[in-house]
Length: 91
Image 1: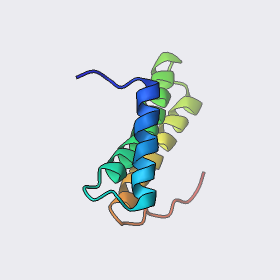
Image 2 (image 1 turned 180 degrees about the vertical axis):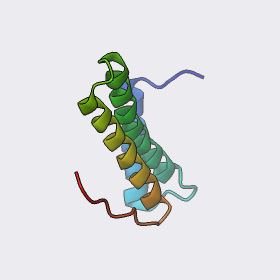
Image 3 (image 1 turned 90 degrees about the vertical axis):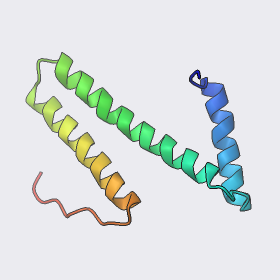
């Protein structure tokens, strides 16, 4: 199985949105695709932060960006499970 092209993914996402808006998503395909796409985008941010951190001599600022990206994704996962993330204090 190949990876969908950008155009194919755009068409699939448009269809997923249409299914959700028109109430025809009986098997939750639209909901699943939209959720997975959103999570994929967030994981790409984590991956990019990790790549930058590892390729930049592991600078302190880049480490902080990586931790922030991971925490953001962790909070997203908690919300998806119906839980509220813990309040963060400090920087």
